[in-house]
Structures are given as C-alpha cells and as structure tokens.
Image 1 (cartoon, one colour):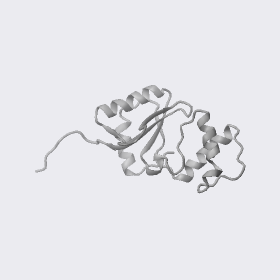
Image 2 (tube, helix red, strand yellow):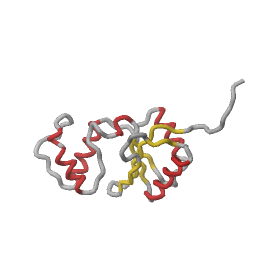
Image 3 (cartoon, helix red, strand yellow):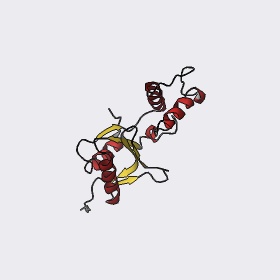
Image 4 (cartoon, one colour):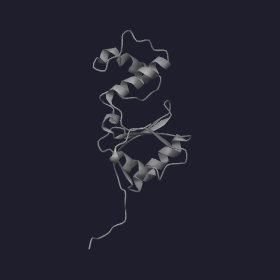
Length: 149
C-alpha cells in the first residue's frame, strides 16, 4: 500500500482521472531504509549474495547489489537520493505501461499535473520493474474560476 499525505492524495486524485482502468498506485513516500530493503530484496531474488549485512549508512555494504540490479535493467535510485523520500515520486502499475505513460503525458499537457521541475527524468517507464515512475510537484484540483462576494 502506498504511503500518502494530504498533498499526495490531492495529486493522485487529479491524476487518476486520466489513467486507464486497472492502474494502481504502488508507491509514493518511502524512507531511505525502505528503499534499501527494496534493493536488498530484489538483489537476493536474483541471486546476489551479500558479503556482509547491508546497512543504510554503509554505502559499501549495498552499492554492489544496486549495481547488480542496474546491470539487470532495474532503474532504482540509491537510498538517500530517491524522490520517494520526499514524497514526490509516484509508481504506477497496470496492464499497459504505454497507456499509463500516455495518460500521464495527457494530464501534463492539459495542465492537470506539473512534473517536477529540474528533475533529470521526471517520467520513466520501468519495464523490468513493470511500472511508470513519475515525479510530480503539483496538481490542479479545480479549473473553474470563481469570484468571492
């Protein structure tokens, strides 16, 4: 289950109107330790053997596993660098990644969401991990102009 705050919920509600049926939000916020555990789990699933216990603050204990996963085609960020730590990254899964990517691009083109400015790759189709990773900084929740009083 994805961890969301109120801002993430607003963005999700704006974005999901564009997404194809069957799309699920699997991750938004995750702390650095959770990012490391994903690396450890996936590396072990693929047969990587750690020479010592991976520890978050000992990069040398897990960097080999991350490089191993990159070699297998995974696009995964280091703990401490991932935009998931700031709650700006959304992982979307579903039966058709191309349709999800098109839907996100349509939401951007129509001004419903704004991709994270300054991000090197704010929209990535992760085929090996079967998700679309999107870095979003804002969403338009009501496009109807109104006046007070």
